[in-house]
Length: 522
Image (cartoon, rainbow, N blue to C red; front, side, top):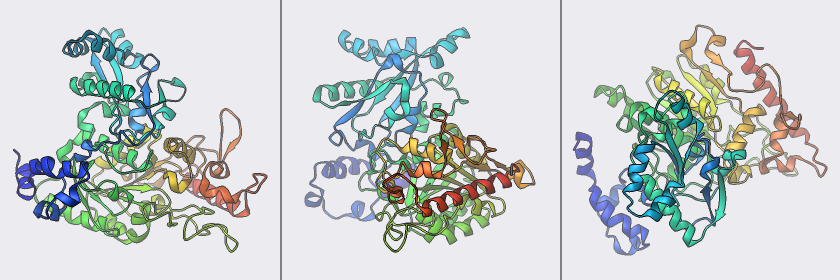
């Protein structure tokens, strides 16, 4: 037992929690049968208890894997907000040993059907005279909420499809996932570190168990999983801590007694998470724990509004603290009120569309450009729909010797008015329409702004707008707004945009031109 584990045992009896508290909540008898005691009073939760939460009853459909159509891109694994779909690559001899241990021929045939040869994991290795690996995708029915985003990102590969649940299918899915869990970890030689999406093949990257109470298809949860995957892959579970501002991400991640995190986590107030993190960082440094990565997590309400002063103070401190901003452009947790991150013409509570006004009239606060004006701060704006850009931003932020801010576009289905399976699609469209450009600003890259700021990752970087490669239509902010319910009232019966929306489009163009100018591309 480590010193850390021993200290935890002084505060919380983990075995008692698992054997007494968790079953009481799972059976619905906690309020009746559990007496008040120190364990309940402290509200401490062991890591990873979200893994024991069962959502099998939640959705009518579950994804079905079609092995012979899979190319091993790992897009579905990275996109899933609930750790409900995982991948694994195993050499043929290791896979055969695991199948043999089943001892039942019918089960061996059933489980073997979930593995396939892909060019990525088998053919390329075989071409180099190395042992290729078989690849498989596995669904955990207890974590899947049925959002269907995995099918959406799989796209024309058609290796996944949503099918209606029945008890027979659920049982087969449970057996397949149990077999996945019984097999050895993907060997290091099968993980291509240049293919950043492969991070989630490594068990040390799977630090978010699912079982959180987030909405189906939640864009925030995907960002959290991916941040932890990149950080865990390089630094390890024991070297990560999170200070979470109050908001959606704190509520669905701390619904007692279920904790989806396998790392040290604490929740501060709505407004002071960066200040709280400063105290944690200073104490860690006193103890010689400089290598530990400390992340502040919060939404746009916490970081751009009520906690903006605290964030700015932290950025000026020079302390080695990283900030993940889950930008939904709205106060998601409290019912969808507008924030300073909301777009012009957006129809949200406190800035609603009506007879006296046409939605939000204020400019959107651009945290990325504001943060860049703080000296010695790494800043990135990114989307999870581009895993390469997202992972590079997280790795660079972790490596930067000082404060870092990573702002992520996170689709909020109920407040944006989009379908549950479209988090990645809308994030990609936000990038392509200049609604939410991506960039990385790294002070280590030079003395001048244009040397530090990279706009790579945006399509047609030297143009004002991009063009849909299929329809040849211009992709601009109006095109983005047509796809979301929060802008629906800005169009008349003929589909013509309002003056307010056209003004908002000019605001988005002005911001894009500013970024290009700062990057030396004006």
